[in-house]
Length: 150
Image (tube, rainbow, N blue to C red):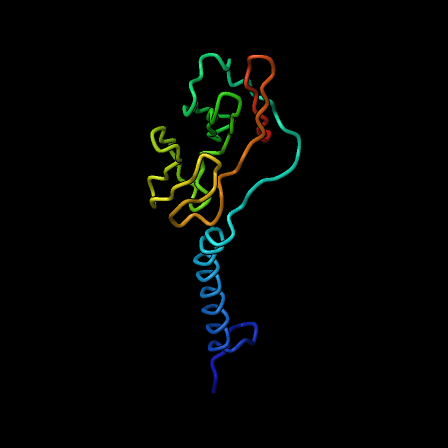
């Protein structure tokens, strides 16, 4: 005869439910990071803040200046005399902070050897997509960058 608890549920059925629930919880905890890796979140839209990145006269071509807004690092590079670009420094692969390499004019990720061009596009490595670009404006002699709100 099957053993029953006070509610009339057989012990074996109770253990099946208990172990099944535990297994489902463990699987969900293991699959969450896999999902974050395969489909990285990118915030889009909404109002943007404008950051003053400084005057153009003190900014040689092929150099970068790093900034941080609300814990989100980004870099502004001077591509040519009249062209500036701004990118998030978070690698789209796993979020490591990329570094600007002036001699090669590339961003390099120290975690998994990802390399990005000065246009933010993937050159090599495991990143699934380009660096997140920000809009850059030159107003008079000042460089301004539109960044997502904090």
